[in-house]
Length: 298
Image (cartoon, rainbow, N blue to C red):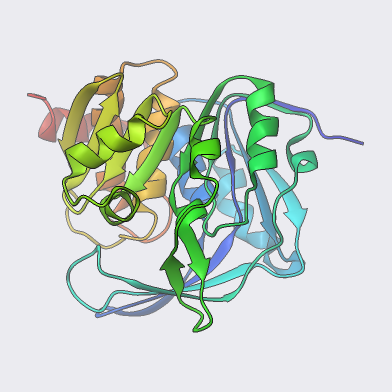
């Protein structure tokens, strides 16, 4: 029997069992963009659903989502995605990603019975979410957000994640309303390191809004207008999940706010998230306090 869920915001992506290696040591974290984004969306006061794939042994990884009030839909997989994230320097955008196992891909049936005002596709690796799944989401109506990383990252023979040309790029972008990318991915796709030019080039391919994260903050291009905000973590302890949190908070906030307001909201939520490993687990009052303290003149 198909499960019926109605919500404001839904995320779709595989759970990732992350090993994070940095100068601070080695940590094991329950990851996956779908989770970071769902936690961020809950701060906007929305009804949130999270649809994921994982191995039976990792079902407990969704505990924090359930405690946060997120409706979790689990599709079991032969294996969970196992990812190692190495940060060799103090530059948080310099990282080496390797993958030891990949979860089974999603299929259109995985989203049957779920209705949302906005969807965010938070895939980690190409093939996790297909064009057919995106077409099924489009048929449901509502806003569609997608993260570039789930379409340009491929596991190489060495086990590392590599950026490779995106064969279905135009077909996917024609279906997407809000596209998330980081500065490195944007340069790979457009050939320019200028984030403003890169955002414009990506928007020309279909998405109405571009959310581009970089080392210092976020750039949003919405209906031809730019909005920017810096990140202010005090201190920086949780780089992993930065982009997922940023687009999750932006897209969820856009359901009730302008692009300019959503940009500030996303920057504040993301700043707070980066102060600790794992998904954001701060009260909404902290977000409002951060905005008043750091973004009052924006």
